[in-house]
Length: 92
Image 1: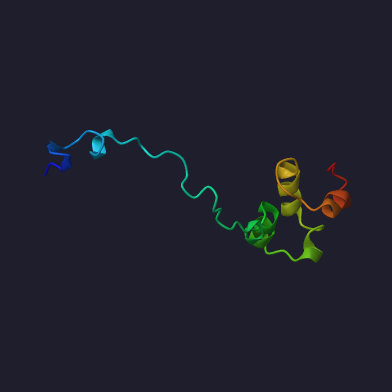
Image 2 (image 1 turned 30 degrees about the vertical axis):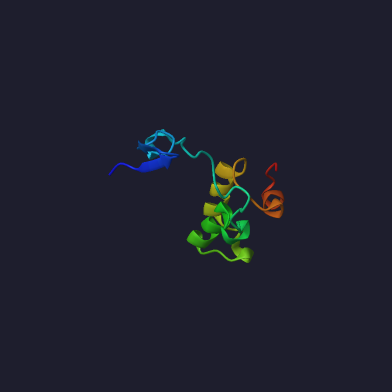
């Protein structure tokens, strides 16, 4: 269905400026000024997830060989408590 617009006594069918095909694309995030709340504390760290998988309590951290092996492999790219690194003699 063609759109009809009357300008004075002239009737224009499907004017190019009013048709959807000629409208510019909307770009960018329309909600850039309304950021969504971000709760970074809700996600457990990789260390906390590993401790949960190994089913360790904080008292068992130092004596766990499996946790020590994980920390040795991940101490440079994952969070590991500083006290645990010091207890095992690893560099932070």
